[in-house]
Image 1: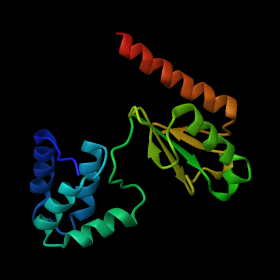
Image 2 (image 1 turned 60 degrees about the horizontal axis):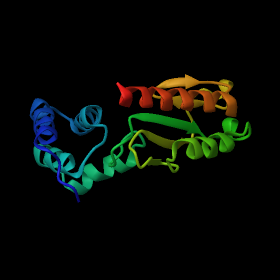
Image 3 (image 1 turned 90 degrees about the vertical axis):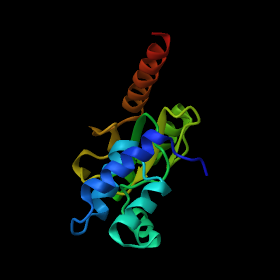
Length: 165
């Protein structure tokens, strides 16, 4: 297991210390750590457990119970493809397959270059817009393979331009 850098460890300590003594701070701390680092590393779970008097297993259980938490770093761009019933019957499986092909990220994984994370979700609460894809928090409703390809190509081109700059 790779050790976190000092900056990340300091951020975790700041978040934990800020909420120490509050009632029920585990989820608040987990959200703040993930917002800050992009994921919840084991070291954060240890610090939260210690500060709240919970076991690491309890904190880990919370992280694993809620789908919004991840224990792995995410890519710079996050693509969520809904595979709920309404989206699935409108061919969202083809969209997730295409996204994987275009980004090099497996489903629920991050591309080797760290640019894209691709997540399958079960419902995004926008069934009337099916099939739905969320890219970096932006909803792309009635998504087609052409729309998705254009979105991913735009992000890829922006990344290439950033590297050239």
